[in-house]
Amino acid sequence: MRKLILPAALVGIGAAWFACSGGSQPSTQNVAPTHEAVAPDVDYGQTWAVKLADESTWSHLQTPGWITFVTKRNLHDAAEQLGGKAARPHAEAATMFRQAALLSANAAIETYAKTPQDTDPVGASHLLAVAWALHGDLDKARAASAKLDGVEDVTSTWHAPWKAWLAGDAKWPPGLSALPIELPPVEQGNWPIVADAPHYSMPVQGAGDHAQDMGDPGSLVALALWHDAMARKLAEPAMVELYTARYRLPVEGPVSGTGELTEEFLYASDFLTPQDAAFMADVMGEKGAGAVAAHEGTSLLAKLAAASRVDGKVDSDRAVDVATALRQGILDGSAAKTNGETRQHHRWFADMARVGLLRNLALLAEVEGDRETGGKLRILARDSSLDHTSDASALIALGAWDAGNRYPTRAQEIIHRHATYYPSLEAARYGLDVLALRVSRERVETPGM
Image 1 (cartoon, rainbow, N blue to C red):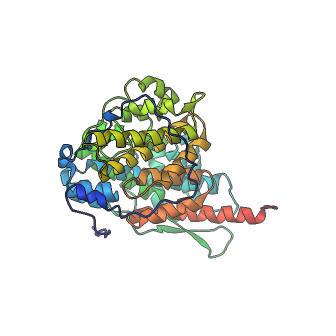
Image 2 (cartoon, one colour):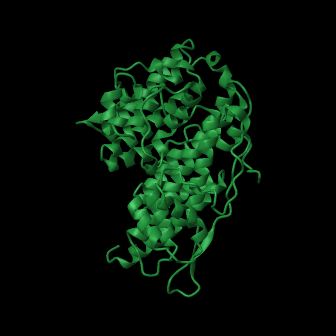
Image 3 (tube, rainbow, N blue to C red):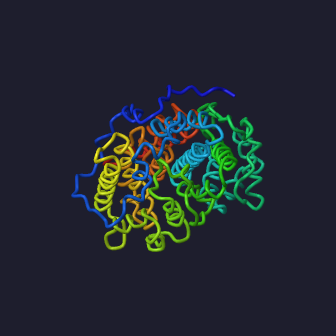
C-alpha cells in the first residue's frame, strides 16, 4: 500500500500544544455583522468543553493521536497514531467520502440530467445511474442504467456492480468488490488510497477524438464503505451510526435517534452533550424539524436550536447571537474551573462549540425548508474553520450543497484543499470541472450575462 505523506503532526503532550494553531486566518467574506449576544437560559457547564476545562480532567486525551486529530484534523495520521482506538477518525473518513460521492453525484445531475446536450458522452448514463442511486431515486437510477444495456463503453467495468445491484433488491450497501480498484483488507493500520484519477476518458459524441476525463464516484463510495466497516470494527456499530447520522447518503435512510455518545465520539466534536447526536439523528430522520420539541428536554443542542428560531424556524441572525452566547458561556464556565483564568484550550474548545452549533443549525434550517438560511450558516461555519475547528465532512458537504446549486467554484477549492491530504478525493474534482465548463458556457451564451 502506498504511504500517504502528510505534513508533520504536532506530537508534544500537555496543555502547551494549544498555544500554536498553525492554521490560516478565516476568510473575511460572507461574515455576518456582529450582533448583541443573546444568552438562552441553559447550563453550559454540561458541555464536554466545560467539563474538560481543567487539564487534570483530560490527561488521558493528551496523546499524540488525539493531539493530531484536534489540532490538525488530520484523520490519516490520527488513525495511525490511535491504533485500536481509531474508530473516530475512521468514522469521520467515512462521512468525508460519503459527502465527496454526493458532491460528485450532484455535479453529474446538474450537468447531464438538468442541462443535457446531444454531445454528452454515453458514459454519462453510468454517472447518472450512480448519482440517482445515491440520492435514493432508484427508478431514475434504473432508467439511466438501462440506457447502457448492450453498450460497450469505457464505464462498463465501473458500471457492472451498480447494474447488478439495481437489478436486485438494491438494499444498501451495494457490493462494489468488482470495481477496478484495489482496497486493502479492513484491518487496523490500513488506510486505502485510490489516487489514479482520472479513471477513464469518456468520448464526447460527435466531437471526433475529444473526450472528457472523469473520476468515478464509485471509488468514493467504496472508500466510504471501507472506513465505515473499519470504524464498526473498532467501536459499537450503533455508536458509529449515531455519530455519522448527519452526513449519511440519502439512499442509506435515517438512523434511530436514541442512545448517547461516548467520550471518544463527543470530545472535540460538533456536539455539546452526549444526547445531542440523537437529536440530530432525528432531525435528519423521520421527525425532521419536530425533533427540536421532542429532544428539547434532554439535548442542549435542541434547546439552543429552539432559542435560534423566530416564528418556528431557524433565523440566521438569531443563530449567530446564540452561537456567540454559547462561546462566551463556555469561556466563563471554563474559567470558573481554573481559578478565573482563561486558558488557550478554553478558547479552542469554545470555538469548536460555536462552529459546531452553526453547522448543526444549518442542517436544521434546511430540513425546515429554508435552504437560504442553511446556506448562510454553512458558509459562516466555513469562514470560521481554522485547523482546530475544521471538519472535512462539513466542508465537503458545503461543496456538495454548492454543486447542487450549480456553483462549482467553491466546491473545487474545497476538494483541492482536502485532496492534498486525501488524494483519493481527486475523483470528485472531474465532475466539478465538467459542471464548471457547462455553467461558464451558459453564462456566455445567455444574453445579459
